[in-house]
Image 1 (cartoon, rainbow, N blue to C red):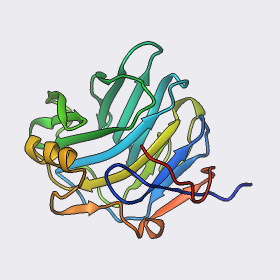
Image 2 (cartoon, one colour):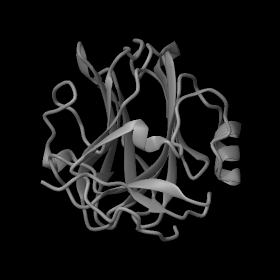
Image 3 (cartoon, rainbow, N blue to C red):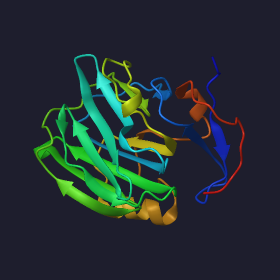
Image 4 (cartoon, one colour):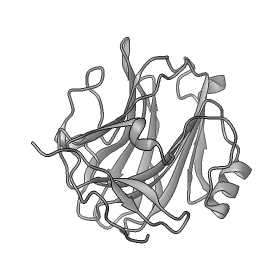
Length: 227
């Protein structure tokens, strides 16, 4: 068994940041946020991702499950050779439509999703701009005390991962708010390369190693590069 590792990288947006690298599909590689989540009637999640350009099919950027409902909140991806990356939000078992977001180009991109219990309204942003909006995506609160997993879909509470639904690529700078971020906030964060919007319930920081538990993630411990 290999000890799980995080990589440390210099980035265009900050002096250095920690990056999760998922090298190929696996039914074991994942990271779990060690955070106690409250019940949320609205939520926003923003992160930076780079997809493996040679890995196609359905994959999962993150999934959140509670004991009474496994498919509580997910961001899913459909990668088709020669076509743009397609993203879809899933809330309380209701699967939203896949929407084209950006080219599968092996570059870093920012992704933000938001959802509100009011009307089941949702929105998807990439690189600071809105890609799609909709409504009717469940009207139930997102339950408290769940498991937030990066890189895998959960078929049971916190586990039962499948290789063909796993993420391959890199993820960093993941932030979660218990409110809906507006378009101006998301655009400003992208323009300033800084998640300055107030009140995140989870934030990526220098102490991230204390708030993320890694499982089987392989890679150099302290590689330094640019994106």
